[in-house]
Length: 480
Image (cartoon, rainbow, N blue to C red):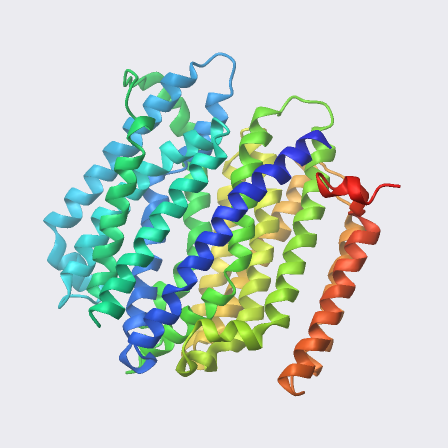
């Protein structure tokens, strides 16, 4: 339980910063949707541009975050040389990307559908290049177990962004979408200044032999990452091309805004990953590691199901995050959250091929999942609009998750507590169905019933898997 306790503690820190940060970012969603009406398509532009940013960020880091964790824990490598080599490699690629986009700004902007607004593309190209470079110092903080510094800097960046957005959209009553991207660039630049101690004070060394070995390890992770991020963003990038109608940005904006409500699942997955990944690689040879993987999977599923029920149960409150003219898309929230749960399970399953240095499998699984998602989008978006985007995520992650589990049990068998997990899934699904049946009640009665149902789920967790007496700190008050 020692390592699980460490995971829970670090996940709490990363999770607090992630959840608080995302919550603060949510404050921008009502701001943007209030100032940029659905009909204007402004939020659709933001959704589309940031989908491209997510993909480019994966390309520019090319799997070097995970590779850095793997190689810095190898006994025959100097961790300082690994860190320096990683910084130089990612920094060079990021700088080259920004330079190329700025040199070819007009044709690139035209191809993306923003020929009349090339500043959108130029500003975000520079921003994502800086972001990609900063991913390595942040990975270094995680590797050094500096969770508090990591969390503080992430929150500082978000707070700066919120303040500047409020100044522009509220105090100055601005309505120009371009300022969303200008503000992002400024905050990213300030974050780079705050992280200066993480890439100064040591000798920068590029070990070309080491880099070659690292790239051999990382390129399948890059393919995996591309496929994985396409599972999250391909629908938002392709939507304007597939849904070829005059209201395409309006519809994309509705889908993007409502999907934000479902992003609490992404927060939990991200927080779990930040804490889990360094521990997995650091303790690869430890006894009892298999049991830790198995239990971590169970607890991950338990708490993501709880998050799912909380979001669905309090949708009548959470919907006020976005403006009323976006509410027509709220029906995608449970579907997007289900896809995020599958993505998190897939992430947990992914460690077997990373630990045996067979990352090519990750590329295969993610590629298959991505192909399934693209097929659903291409075939059904012209007919069903953004609802097909939501279901495409479920299909894509579901296929990748199942494939990884089946093959993983052959190469790196783990005895996951499937029966216990199945009980939680059945209970959560049953509660969800009851919530849907009660959704037509008066809002107060519906919220009351949903609270009771969530209490039942929490009660089962405490009774079956998390007795209060075993919890850190508060546990002493429940021991007899």
